[in-house]
Every structure is written in structure tokens, then in C-alpha cells.
Length: 322
Image (cartoon, rainbow, N blue to C red; front, side, top):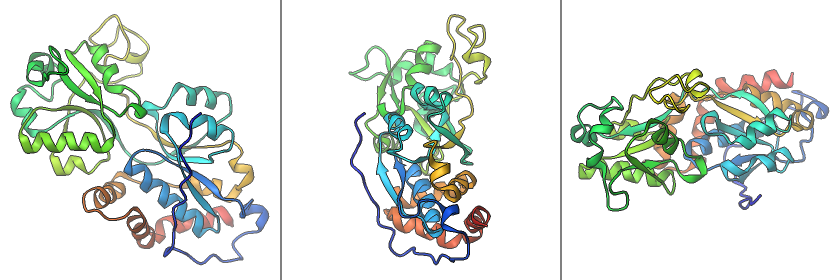
């Protein structure tokens, strides 16, 4: 598997005193070896991971941040080259992850606490150009307004970056929508499309996710697809297309943490800390905006949250190390 280069992010300025009476070296585990946390492709994940790392450092651990492709990091994690991933979206996790998890080669550390949603979104100008939204059937009637030279005669829809999977393309195919999905180059590229749609008053259909600052800034709305249910993904009889499964909205997005199975034996207290670690949408979205819109650094934003929320994370350390 091709891995990106290791990136160790300095955490100067956030050193927190660690009491030697908290726990013994045996309970802490291999404190002289760094815990390697995966850094993936989106800002929210960077924030989640950096905060988790700072909490581990406050407990007395060393932390390294490893840049890793979201869709191809699972083999490395199963082998202990990566130790944990702090923001895994169940809606677009790979079959490789599921297979390795079932085989006991990867461990689920529980939900992160983000109440998230994914789906097709549109901008205010799009609503004016495509009456009938947010009903998904409106897209069938007004697909012509989304046509571009590269997609003619189909409408253009912006899908996730290739590294995130193809949820947009999957929905378009299953529902038979007259659109051609175009993978975005990055999270930033999707945001640039959204901004351009608002400023130029042009139509845009894009697959996107929340939490994200763009919802508030650009007044995005979700398209109402047929309700996602487990039956829709197992029985073609459910949903508007009787010949396929998945012809509906995504199921609510579970966002969880995952780890190398040897983590709990190598760093017992850290394992308990990460299992208990939570981060809410209300906490994360303002931090994403501070970084992506206001230009603040990841380090400063994460440090500020850690400094201001001691009562939230300190109990994790106390409970894990007593």
C-alpha cells in the first residue's frame, strides 16, 4: 500500500503537567514509543485528531501524526504502522475495513459523538433555478439547467473526492437521475464550487457532509431523497427503483474511532482515553470555520479548545489512569 510521508506536528505551547502519581508505567504502557494517529484529507478530521493527540500528551504519552489516505490506510493500521484513526465515517468506509474488522485485524473504539449527515446539497440560487427542491424528483424535471459541455446531455453533479468513495454516483445510478457525477479534486474544490454558485448565481448539485462551516456561510440545504432504511440496502422492493438496492438516502452516518488491535495491550490507559473521547458538531464546526475561513492555524485552534475545555477531557485521563 502506498503511504504518504510521515508528518509530525509540533505541539509546543500546549504542554500540560502530568502528575507522577496518576498511574504506574505498566498501566501507561509503552510511554517511550509514540502513538501514531492517522491524518486524513479533511479539516474536521485534523481537528478531531489533533485534540485527541493533545489529550494523550497531557496524560504523558508521545504522539506522532501520520498523513494517510483515508481509503488505503487500513492494511497499515492492521499491521501497527498506524495506531488509530479518530474520525471514520461508516457511510463511506471501504469493504477492506469491514473485512479486516470482521477478521479481528482492526478494532472499533466506539462512536465519536458527531451527529452528522451526508447527501446532495444545493445553494439558494439553485433553489430558484430548480423549483420543487428539496424534493429529489425536482431534479428529474430541471436537470437541463445543470448541463455543462463536459456532461452534455446530462446534468452535472459534483461527487466526493475520489479518496472518499462514490456515494453521489451510487445514488444517481440507483435512482436513475439524468446527471453525470464528477469527482471533486478535494474538500476545498467542493467548497470553491459552492462559493462560485452563490456568487455567480449558477446552479449546483454537490454531494457534501455536515458538520461543515459552509452550511451556515452559504445557506446550504439537503435534497430530500427517499428515506434511507436498512431494507432499502438489502431488498430491491424498497425504494422507487424495484431493480436495485440503495435507491434512497444514506443511512444516518455513524462516525467512529478505529485502532490497531494491539493498541489496548501496548498503551492500556491511552486505549481507555480514546474510547471515551467525544467531540460534538457544535464544538467542531466553529473550529473548522476558524481554520478554513478565518485562516487560523490548526495548532492554535486545537490548543484553544483544549485550554478552554479542561473539564471535558481531564476526567478521561483521571478515569483511565486511576
